[in-house]
Length: 372
Image (cartoon, rainbow, N blue to C red; front, side, top):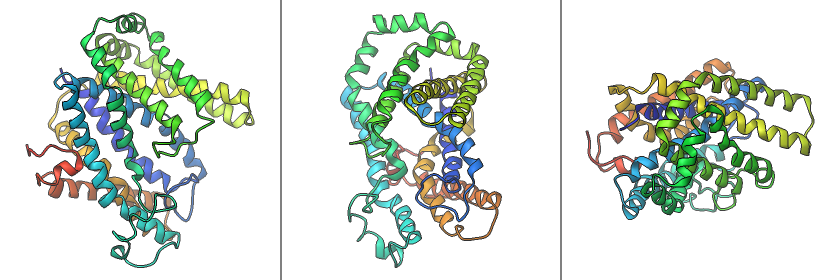
């Protein structure tokens, strides 16, 4: 049976990406283009979102893979993944991402001329950041594609042996809320031991911390949906406990980072609260969504299809808008409102009047050709 709360979560978390990426324009962290004024206080809500927004997407993707494999064989699933993830990635890298790089080059005085002087002649001149060829925010797609292919044998084993010892054990220990925290054990060792050695690059081939961390979260999603009755009843019943744990662990993280200088001891302690925090918020969101969002609606049906094209388009639209706002002496509220509303409205216009209605364009954005 389809879980509508998972669809809602997917839509809402992807929707948060627009707010998050607009925030990147205004915080001191590195980003493709930056506002003429940055705001230190904004790092706190951004840091909060950054803790769990990607983990929950990979967990949800693992859950979606469980459902996809129920009606597909290995070859069918692989071909479907290549079509749904690979084709939009290639199209995005050639047609959607280049405007982002073009406006970044203009902003940094690394290129002069109009867009068609840049594209396509400059597109393949090396790999970003030294060159211009990149997948930028679409990095999620190649990672998900690789994870799906690597884990097919394991997933099919778990699917064909639903009463295996591992799944049976997981059902027993996750009956209580503390049992769901067993998942933070591998996350802790990854955070404590691997994260310091491999900076996040999103380049796939050398991004070992991100790769290992995200494939584990992806696998967790498949496991959790395999014990679905136990999992959903536990997160729904104890959702407020997970919420309290998330608030406390995030508060402790803030305290540690402000009160103690960086050291090995601080790193190992902070790593524990970091994974406890992200996992608590993942469980909290699953719990509250299971309670209040597991309902079908026409809005959900529309948004569930639109979210993938929105994800592909949003950052390019946002950066184009942001480029023309950089030097204006306007407030954070005015600039961010223009960027958020402009990104939502233009993404919707592209989706509603072009992508959604043209069966030849739909597959380029990960949608089936059939128009409902």
